[in-house]
Length: 389
Image 1 (cartoon, rainbow, N blue to C red):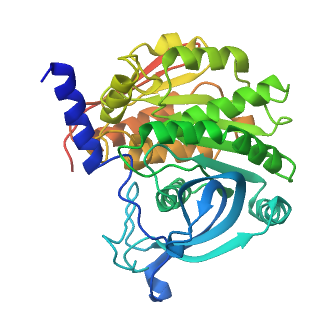
Image 2 (cartoon, one colour; image 1 turned 60 degrees about the horizontal axis):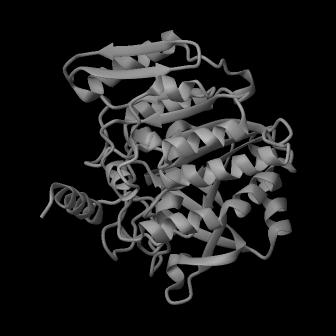
């Protein structure tokens, strides 16, 4: 067995065990499970636009991994338990029903008949919650439930002051489904573009986007399409764009950014040199680097983006592929940023705030920690050390 084969087999085995998410589970419980209100921290209403087929074999999944040629719309209500820890997604194991006192639990699902009904509902929620919307685009190997729980966790932990919207494309939720997932994400470009345009027609003032892994490819393609039509900032309503662990070929990303142009609002790339999931993606792609583990931050910053290198920050699992969401201190950093509307935020991070967070990061890791932030203008390094208290 050659060295390359050994590497890919080992990585594939790791992904099969962990993946970008766990095995697909039912979103809805088989039976009603209740918990005292005192055990519930919050209930979040998650609006959904999806290119998945509605699940028929097991309706409790709500939407499965098959592709639809049209976009479907829904709202999922999710409760978060009081015992929740920042950065974690407490989930029921296997086929067990979720206990709202202990796990994230989908308490209700509402389906909308068409885009008009959805636009009316999400528009009303946006107006009620403060005229901002957070669109999350999930990554490779994610079931519908994975995306729902991740955006719930992000909205809850960052204390996002607006309406959470999940764009869920038809991932097969299988570690062996990389090519299927890439094709599914590509097929969803027009649907994401249309969803962003729909949101822009509401009374929203800022549409913030967080995309993860392969979802960043889909997001960049949709932004590129907006740029081609001359509306790259959605009439001034596009807010933050945050690309976490981007699974995009570096040269392709550069071409996308050339077409998009240098951003007018904060546009960040979160990368990590120890991202094991992207090592496999790079191998599959002919040993070409991915943006999410690229070693030349200054090269990327030349295109007008801010690059945050999280290599020396601790991840929540062995893959180091979701540090932005599962490291409690990085979630705090993300939340501090998101709570300031993009139109009011400086292009450069606040060094004082970053140093404060860096001190906390050092304690969380328990040893030397370092976050390097490369902007088009300068490089900031946060280096701290310390033992856990």
